[in-house]
Length: 66
Image (spheres, rainbow, N blue to C red):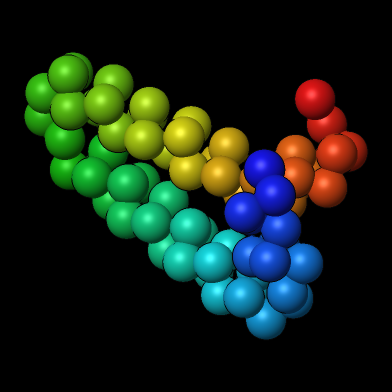
């Protein structure tokens, strides 16, 4: 996890990254709203879960969670 330390330690970089993840999550919600196929909805739900885990990256790198 050491290569990720500069990203999570720099407040400006982290804020930009976090805002981008929020943008991507919102885009996935739009896909769900327009989806007519269950597989698309499941895939989109998985993408949202993965993006939310990225938002917790700082905590994992800092050692707050295991």
